[in-house]
Length: 152
Image (cartoon, rainbow, N blue to C red):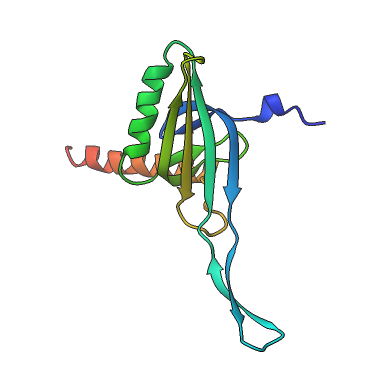
């Protein structure tokens, strides 16, 4: 049997770590239903993929949770997509749309965030893998070596 505690990743967005209470993935296809007056059958028209998304309830806990909450808010408001890592799913580029921060008088030191993350691209294989990260790092090293070589 799988030991989940040993296989879960630490969750983060743009490098800001958090814990995950729950996450829900939504996706599917857009289907138009054409119903005609007096008809007995519905014509179904497939309209392509629906925009996928992750609804995440994250939380921060501890003495530094207020500072972490500020960093997570800044990461969510930054322009462009960021790398989202969830405990079970691999990392992927995503935009954070709406988010909500919750603090409670009875739970000091515990700050909850609920946010909607929209992955970049609906196509299969949009997850960043080890080979993607290796290519990015090696590509940057090659560019740095070329720039450094121009000085000599």
